[in-house]
Image (cartoon, rainbow, N blue to C red; front, side, top):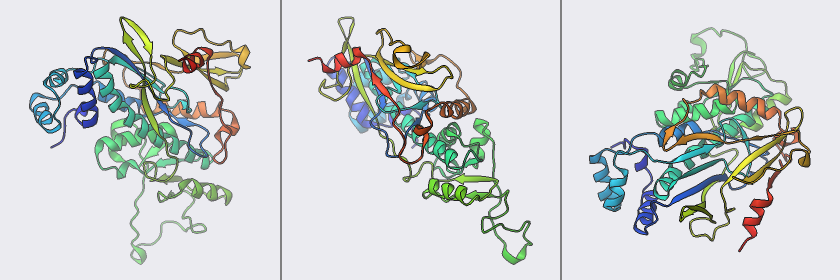
Amino acid sequence: MIASSPLLQDGIALLDADRALRAGLGDRRASFELSVVEMPRHAGFLVAAGLEEAAAKLTRKGPDPDELQRLQRTVGFSDDLARRLAGALLAVDVDAVPEGTPVFAGAPLATIEGPLVEALLACALVTPALHRGILVATRASRLHLAAGGGLLIDGSAARAASSGESLAIARAAHVGGAAATTSAFAAMALGIPFRGEPTLDFGALVTPEMPTEEGWGPPDRLIPLGGDDEEAQLVEAQRLDQRAGGWIASGLSGTTGVQVALRHEIVALEQEGAWVPRRGVSDRSGAHPGRKMVTRYLDADGRAVVDVVHLTHERMRSPRALGAARLQPLARAVLRGGRALEAPEPPRAGRERAVSARQLLPRAVTHLHAPERYRVELSAGVLGLRTAE
């Protein structure tokens, strides 16, 4: 049986939501933040992706009555939660960094706000979607750098176990820098260019179409990277000045390459009509309390200088004080009351944003080995809440 609603995927999230209801906290508004735990080794930047997949899941209808009844028997949650889940949208507000934006540890990627029950379930949907998206997009961006800007082709989506996974991988890979995909389904559904060529070798039965060049094949041949240590292969190919019509990356969603850890934490909870800062659900975690926003400071040429995490209603720091010329809030409103505010953004828009924004990062931040750390600072207001008893 295949579940029709993504709400049914995470049984632990359902039990957590049920506990919140039983504790009388289910209708208290909560503010959750999603962020990268720490920057991976040798990764100076990450690429935001997975947002459109997450938004699509959040705006789908709830489970049908028969499905919900079976699930309740399986997991054992209360009738109150079952009634809450029946056919309704998750009434949450979501603000998030657009796909293709360079992001860093220590700054929120997305904020989810709504009744605690709905916010908990929304986090269970959004976190894995953003995690996979960032992982694939960042790997694709690094391979695009390693290829010297040459044609990178996503060969991972075609190997996915399901059509939904294939679309998610192809989209994130395109956002990160892959110019095309070998997945016919993803190319058709997302409007991403398809690139591929036959791989069967009939040996002496067929006359070769073109002579090979130093073992790499014809100079316009698509070269499969094989999925293992693809960055190193591309760096070596560039060193040897090997030419190809394109490089097919099949390890974008695998276990090798950059690894990313995301977490979601509650940072504020409504109490008597006002937001009260909180360090996680238990109020004892390492989360920075308070509702926040991230602002990127840019120099006169539009190059990124520093990101500052401010409290939502805090006065922003002056660009001049940070050696910048102007500032730009990163997140934008995505959902209000569980409904999308805009039509889904095409993946090519995220790719254009990623490629152009990467060029505006400090050059040392984009190094593939031992990169310089990009500056992310906490405002005085955030630091004050963090140190408060």
